[in-house]
Image 1 (cartoon, rainbow, N blue to C red):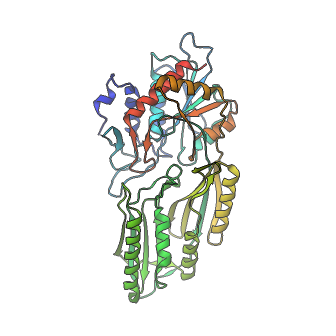
Image 2: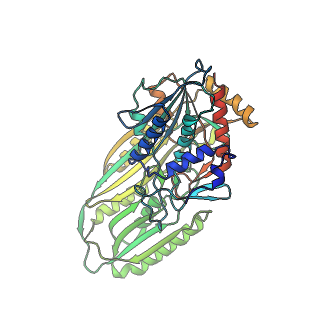
Image 3: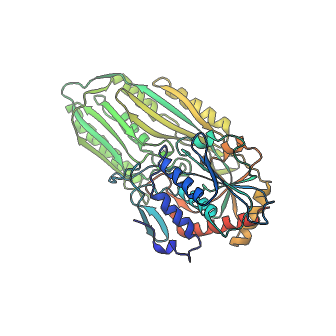
Length: 485
């Protein structure tokens, strides 16, 4: 399915943004699989006669000369990432490596059909392409940076070399609130653990069940972390820890990416026949408790206990108890709030993935914080907590982006926002990982601002972008490029 033709008509202010967004959605581009989209961007820009190249890690970089008479203006870099988070509804057959995103439009919003949309950050990339491909926009010297694998560890930003770009101002097009100019973001770090399994045959006479939890909202592990959203991985492990002692655990799985709150989880277990009634009662009670707790719009909590084949092997009783006890006690969710702004999360943790392999269980956790020291202390605390049951590595760190409230870019964009949109911009920091922190460390001379349209449900199949706010974003971008000095 494609966009409503009205969005692509010249009467729509942002029609070129929607044209390039539709193109982006037609090309599969989950993290680690962006090559086809990257090459498409290269082909587009080369066809326009622009200088465009790939760096050693695969980022796409481009230059566009200034409009005549604007050559002396500060150089501007337009920046966004070309990968998307691949999440889908349980009944979706979508293959993110092969299938285009199917677009729907309803009540002023664009969304996908049962999957993440990729407006994070496809809309920002589309806006940058619309600028680069334009023949009539007014601007100073322009550069563009399209990074790879932002969602899976910011590999593109990590790999960018100092000196590759020459601009003065960076406009990051990867935030999700209309009317806000972002001047800072949280840093992050992964805590990755591997549990080597102590396996034994299931006891004779045991009955096997699969226990499936589903219907939670999920969402972005930074933006939505303080929104009382259930973490399916933690909920299921909490239930498993309460089951009768005769229950044996064969596997537990939840989530697919560490930067999304898991929406569903599944375990395979066995239980003595004498404890089946107790097991079913505990599951029913937990189901009732969660149905009352997680009844927000977009949630339809379910917990199913169904018979299945007896597994060949299960965890030893002692390892099962120790592992579940450890996981239930892990710090998760908002851990610290900002001093002077108690509504803003300072430090958080998200257990995003539990995956049972043949002889191990992998656990992936993402810690975020505005304070790099607090981030590192939290990672060390979680690692110490996990170390009795797993081999733990803290890795893939990226710094936060500290705000410069006196920057010339911010002062100008505040004035442009007021003049163009008729209202003052809100100056904000975001509890999510923008690439600005890493990029600013490599290019300390850059002044940076991030802005974008209204996007909700990022990193979940409920992701959607509000059409009218894409117009607003485009108007602000056009006015900014024409006015910056």
